[in-house]
Image (cartoon, rainbow over all chains, first blue to last red):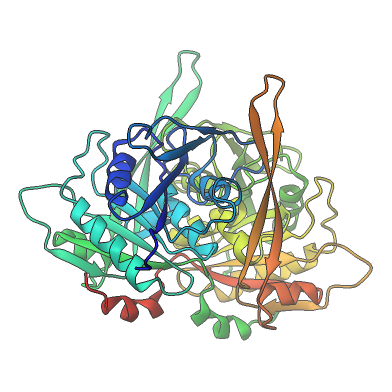
Length: 259
Length: 259
C-alpha cells in the first residue's frame, strides 16, 4: 500500500440505502478515504446498462453523513455512477480502489453478465482503476454481512498492496452466513451454467396478460476450479474478469468461412 | 443448411418500429421462417440488463403484419425478449439462428459491453443458439441500410451452413454508407479502447442540476487485427464474442496473493 491514504470509491446496484453498501463503506473506512457514488434506487439486473436517452440526476446524499463520508446518489445505473464519479465527483483525483456491493444475492457464474454490481467494477477496470465487486449469496434485504467483512477487508488490502493485473476486475462471491465457518478464499474461473426461466403468466384486472420472470439456476460444470464449486464447499470465490469479450480461440475457426 | 426451412428469431434494441429491424427482417425472410420478439420502445445502452423487479408485457405486434410475420413486442430489455421468445413464444421450437439489429450505431470495441443489440445475441448464445448481432456505424434513425444487406445475408447464410463455434456469438459492425464500396469482411478481435465521458451540467427550471452524458471514443489499439482497424479501412468487422468473462491468464498471478 502506498504511504498516502488510499482513495476508495464505493458503489453498488441495490441503491445507496441498502444494508450491503453500508457494510462495505464501514469496512473500507478502515482502509482509506471513502467516497460513495451509488444509485438512488435499486438497479439489480441492470447488467452493463448506461443511460443514453435521458438526463441524469446526481445529488449530495446524507446516507453516510454520520460517518463524515462524502456521498452522492445518482438516478442512473451502476456504470453511470462510476462514470459520473470519475469525470465529475472525483475529477482529477484517481481512486486507488473501486469497490461495488456488497450485493444482496449471488453474482457467480453467468449471473456476472446481468450483474449491476459487477458492471460498476468492470466500468472502473475499463478506466484503469483496481476494482472489486462483492456479492453475498443471500438475497434478503436484511441479510447478515458480518461473517463476510474480514474477508472483504483482506481481499481489498491485497488489491491495495499488489495492484491488479491489467484490464481485470475481481468478482467476489461470499457464501451465505451459516453454522459452517467459511473455509477460505479460492481463485476460480466462471462456471458454465445457465438460468432456465419460467414465465408466470397472469391477467391484470383489465384482462390483459403480463408475465413475471422466475428462473432456476442450472450448473452443468463439474470442474473443481469454478466459482460454483468453491461456493458449494463454503469457500469465497474470486474470479478475475476481463472486458475483452473476444473469443480468441474461435478466430482461426471462423477464418475458414467463405466471407 | 439443413433441408427444412430454418427458424430465425429476430430481436433488436432500437425497438420493433425501427428501420434497422425492418431491414433485418426483410433480409432474413429470404433465408427462412422469421419470428420477431423485440422491445416496444428504444433500449439502447441497456447492456445485458434484465427485468427483475417488475412484470413484463408481451403483446402480439402488427409491425410485420403485411409481411405475414409472427411478431411480438415486449416491455422489457433485449435480453428479456430472447428469454421470453425461448420460453414462451417459441416454446418447444429451437431457432436455427437468432439475429439482433440492425443497430442504428456502432457496437465495436468496448461498446459491446453497453450494447443491447449484442446482449440479445449473447443471451441467445447462452441458450445454445447460433447468434449474430448486426450494427451499422450510423446513429441516424433514417440510416440507409441497403449497402449492408448483401453482407448481412452472406454472414447469416454462413452461420446457417457452418453452425457456430460453441459458446460464441458474432458481433458484426458495418461501415456507414459512403461513396467507397465496402471492401469485404474481416474476422477481428475487440480493439482496446475507451469512452471518455463529458458530463454537460445544466440547471432545470427549478434550479436543480442535471447532467447529460456525452462521450468521445478513444482507440489506443494500433493492431491491424482489430474491429476498429477493419472499420477504418471500410471492411465489415466480425468479432466472435464469449460470455465467459474469466481472465484465464490472470488466475496464476492471483494465486500468489496472500488470501
